[in-house]
Image (tube, rainbow, N blue to C red; front, side, top):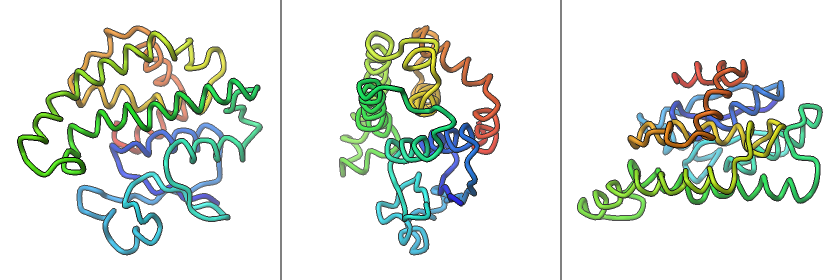
Length: 205
């Protein structure tokens, strides 16, 4: 059995969706970040980064969405969540790395500015740039990444579970997703998938 540690409204949504999509045998453990549960000793023993998601596996704990998504897909090959060729898999890794290291960080400047700046003025400056930076990210996704109807083309993959986070980030930052037709179509398609709907309901989305 796998155990996913998650918080509602967090990026753990991506890993949660994929677990449901592949039909994994898993349990969930909510970590209410708003109450500081991620900083309590019990959770720090699971993930000393004090972040979600974290996935308890028979071999140990995995953290970071890209790693968790790849693990879940690789251990459930019958679900076909990884692309077929090494180049296509590298393309998937590149997209997931961009979402993790660039777009998520750009969004985090809105609510988590204290990670990077001590003064209120500096944090406000970062927050004021979030919508613009996310819009730039969306333009790049539209132009260079999303092939349609799914991220990498006709096959639903690990990338699509991760892209499910983008509409949430845009909504919280006040960026209109309708300006990005591929992202809008992807969001609409995700809302037709039973696994995604099940998980979104758990996360209160």
